[in-house]
Length: 388
Image (tube, rainbow, N blue to C red):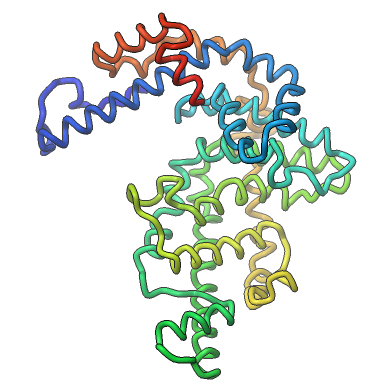
């Protein structure tokens, strides 16, 4: 994988209509990114034996997850995944996959007597799944969600608030007076209809054959593993756990905080109204994924129950279809190249391969990298290692 464009290496600024200053900035940005990802390769090489050790004995991960403060748990999981996943490439995602798979298998084993706690929010397995999903699905999430989110963020007049109390407050601010009960009722009906329309649009998009075909094999194989483990664990909620890996760890976080996943322009944030619209949509999607209706916990959402009842069976079939390998047949094991992978062999091959990312580096960047490797703990490679 080379991050250089066809016109990057020829030294000609302004080519293809790129202004000289803009070209220099672009060139510097690509060089920095290449340097960082090349250092990732070297850091993973340095800690390769430790990464293999983690795969063989997860007690280290368990101890760390139980002793590190809750506010540092995400950093821990990012560091653990970073040992295997250094750059956003298919090959590195496949190297990381066996580690994530092993963590999930251990989660089911440890909690088999308490199936309701499996993959609960805040567990090390759930956090690691989230980090892995965030890295493995960036392009896919952009394909599925970007245009939908863009429409909601750009439409400053769109409001789908269906909490009557919050709606009354909004109307009071915009009208400069207390709204009448008729005005509240009219806006409430309009917002409910608009929310339903948006939910139908995104559900249809997510579950389409086109989007299913675009989903990374790593994520579909992960859902397959969750399904197999859940079906073999008495009392485990199979469909909600599959939905956990697809929706709770993938699509919904992107909807609620699109700026954190590169789905908005640099520095752009959704307005409070747009954010609330996205949150309401994500609530419907999560309820659909969990196979439950809204109740006393959020009574204002009960108006969405008819939509959930209409779509629940279809969405269940979609989640099952996510786990099915389109390449499998009677003679081929589903997701064989991932589930049957020899991770130690993969890591040896990955760590000893030529660092193709370095090919796009300028001489100065390469010298800096070599100098960093020679300085030990105070070198550039070590500094980057502490950031993982």
